[in-house]
Length: 322
Image 1 (cartoon, one colour):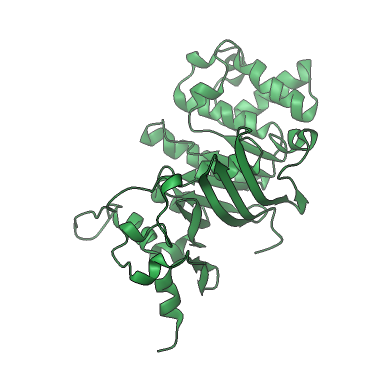
Image 2: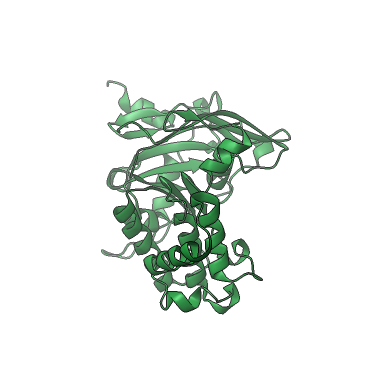
């Protein structure tokens, strides 16, 4: 990887004695598309909320988050105001709750332009129209005067993407951006994100529970479980040779698109509560390959192949000479 745009090291988050993140190490290169996957409750969204200083005051956050070499974790509010929405933008899975229902679309996009680029008046309205055109909203000039309830869910998500682009970000974090949309609109939004990344050169982090979506959109994927990254690899490598049993379980639950039919496998149990973590490997109680050694300590990530690492004792054993 080239010099990372964002480097996260040892990121940990604790909510009153309940550890939500337990040491996240992650790097995103300029222009790269990274998928962050895992079941609900694994810490995918919390990772980026913590990195951008968006968690409530009761959360205890530690570690390091560097943006182009500059430490931003715990930075002054003035520094974070320039970073959030400017250099790093984030869009959320429910556009209906992110847009103000009593303000017109044009005003909300123009507000972002004023905050991050200093545009006002006619200039802001013209740029807002250009952004709506860029994200594929038809009749953009008229839509500027519409309210969110007058647009469909997919169009509101496009408005959110336009607002994110208003600050000309170096990194866009998309948190489950297609969850509330039907399949056809999902495909359109994902195609739009890919096209925007190619046009602008920005990096993309796609947070999702859907490995199929990540495979179509991203170049590299990090699999999270119980507040840790348990496997990380290029997309093609991960699908061809998953190493961690949790990743294997996620892939086993995907229906095949070709070949003979087969029963889908399910991972038994559920993600442990943050204040009730088992000793050692957090996945061990659900793992079909668990051994006594799995309860003795939290496994560290080891390199399986270049650009492929997994945090599992089985990976270590496979690497040992016979």
